[in-house]
Length: 334
Image (cartoon, rainbow, N blue to C red; front, side):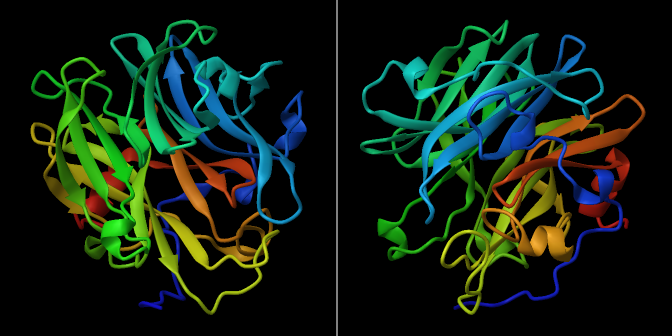
């Protein structure tokens, strides 16, 4: 069963927008929608852009019949104008092996907007990297071999190479159980990836016992690359939670700092959750409960960080903090 962590709490440096209520939910979507979550958010040419996962056609047990990636724009990062049609669908992939496209992340590099995403195929889960300049056409640059997902790109090259974080999920070599870690790989052109190495293992996170993985794309600070990641603890004594017959996991947000010149080096990590599920709304409502999954981190000019996260695989929410406070947490100053 593993070590349990029953009293996880969010850091006091975090402020939930509207007390944790959504900034985007199914009521905002002009087409078939049930669960809106795990969005990627960035600022591109003066506007906020959100691409979000949209699950629909729930089967009443645990699955959804359809999943697309929607898109919305905003002037303030709070109020969103959802576009009439999805941004990316299975049909757009033009690949008969692809069955589902989901979990987008956005990173701006050299005035181009790059998209990381996951696809379910008949032969496993693959992670994709694509690019768009107008949010109308998308060019897929690369797809991983199975099984890999939760990929995020750094916003600039490091030592002349593109860098990404990713979460391969080996099961056969882990005895058929979850035990997934954060890895890093590099590329000269965003198409061919190599130099893979382990960045952070589950065993390095005191409040995780099941898996960890990338969350929001990193942002650059003067003291290091600031990274939000997701953590999972599992308790087999958890029974009925949410819409499913059984849900035994809890997802939290972690934060760490990587070296600017050598991002494979973790120079600081907050030893407790940055954001943990708290209160009735986060612990008891939605498709799944106790799930907070970060997908976007934006540093504003006034030093505020906007953190966008999916809640309970159902809605998209936002929290704020001071960027310096997040750095100080990682370095043990708070």
